[in-house]
Image (cartoon, rainbow, N blue to C red; front, side, top):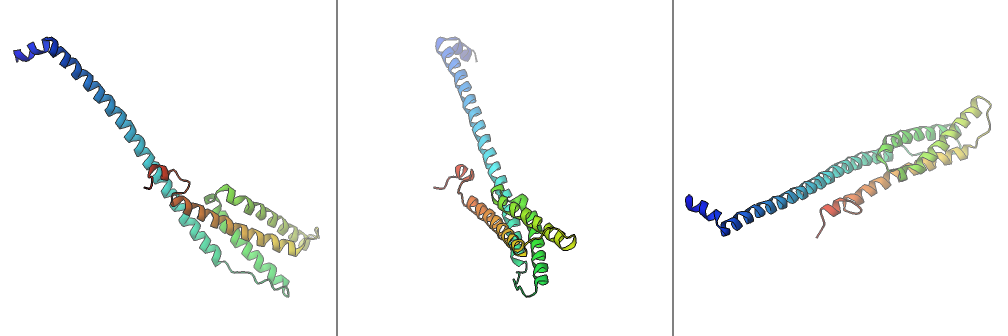
Length: 185
C-alpha cells in the first residue's frame, strides 16, 4: 500500500493521477452529451408516434364520414313534382350539413373554406325561400337554391376526400417530420 502511495507522490504518479481525473472529466462530458442526444431522439420518436396516432384517428373518422356521406340518398331532379324535389334536396342538404359539421374539426382550414362559403350561401337562399313562401318576402330562384345546395354537397365531398388524401400522403412519408426521424434507405 505504501508503494502505491509513494508512486502517486512521484512525478509519474502525479501525471497519471491528473490524467485519470481529466479522462474521467472527458468521459463524463461525453456521457452527458450522449444522454442529451438520446433524450432528444426519444422526444422526436414520441412526437412522431403521437402525430401518427392523431393522423390515424383523423383518417379513420374522415373515412367513416365519407362512407356516411356516400350513403346519403341521391336526389332525383325531376321537375314535374317541385314540392317533392324541394323536400328531398332539403333533406339531403341537412344530412350533408350534419356530416360536414362533424367533419369540420378534422379538416384542414384550406379544405373547408369553399364548403363553409357555399353552406352560408345555401342557408341564406333557404331562409329567403321560406320568407318568400310564408311572409311575402323577396322572390328567390329555386334553381339558384338547388345549385347552391348541389355545390355545397360537392364542396363537402371534396373537402373530406382531400383531407383523406392528404393524410394518406403524410403517412407514406411525404411532407412529414417522420421522414426526417426515420429516413428510408
